[in-house]
Length: 390
Image 1 (spheres, rainbow, N blue to C red):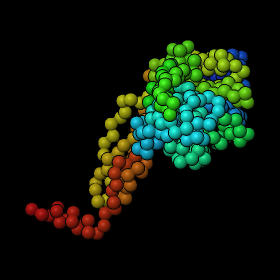
Image 2 (image 1 turned 90 degrees about the vertical axis):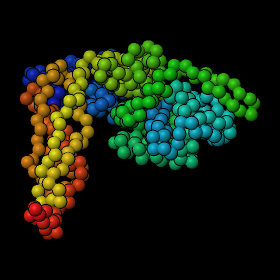
Image 3 (image 1 turned 180 degrees about the horizontal axis):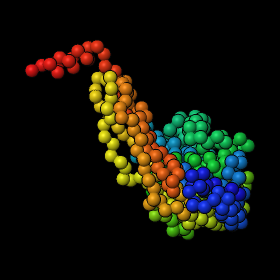
């Protein structure tokens, strides 16, 4: 088992690197002794910092944890306007034939996109996954192709999907780290997933040729009831994959993902996840720069405009695992006196450096917020003309 702390966090502990390594080894062995599953990872959501890992890059069968990517693509399609939550989805004979976890959709039955999301997120329904894959991409095969493209975009280097629901296949593989990466993407950019993943029980209505009847959904993630900070996310099990879970939780401002793969039993995977989450909440403190330095326009030389507005590239946050006092964080604004034209919107023109205990631990880029073209001869003539006009 490895306990991975960022180099900046390790050095800023206030002691020697040797002492930090000793503390790291102690924490490593303590957590390793308590996590029974062979594969695990703990990640902080806002920064993507990996706090702890255990054989996290070994390729494994993910079972229904696969559905995290399926849910991600569904919610991305909603956000992009390709589908709407109220759209009607028709169930094909292929989708209705899926075995394993299911909600017993029938051929030609119709459900809304939102109901299908609930069936996937709460009851881990394979039939609903395939129906949604076909609804979005026309076929499950084309949807799976997009799953693999999205995995590559997220840096999931050891992942290859063969289906959208997680049925065992020799080539359907991922890693604990890659599961954490797609979980983080879903949580960061589609927080509405919590509305579905935290449903404990809910009924849906099957409307079929045989009439209408209720069917009960019960959440497969028992942490929703058992762990006070739980916010999701997805379980999985096959005899090949073992018991898996990607468990998300939030306490105060800290949001964590604990991925457990290959667990021996259902209760054990949840206990392992709680062990990781509790250790993460105990050791983590989060800094967010929520009172940013105001940026004034920057002088531009040789341009059609004399100044250009500035903007930050994004938010800045930092996770400390060594007990540092984050209120001691210092910021250093680094900008040139002027910029030569031309300037393009999005050009990096400076940065804010963040310094803790005398050591730089990160930065936030400052970008040009507009274009400034280089001035030509005609521009100089017009300026001169305006200067000398009475």
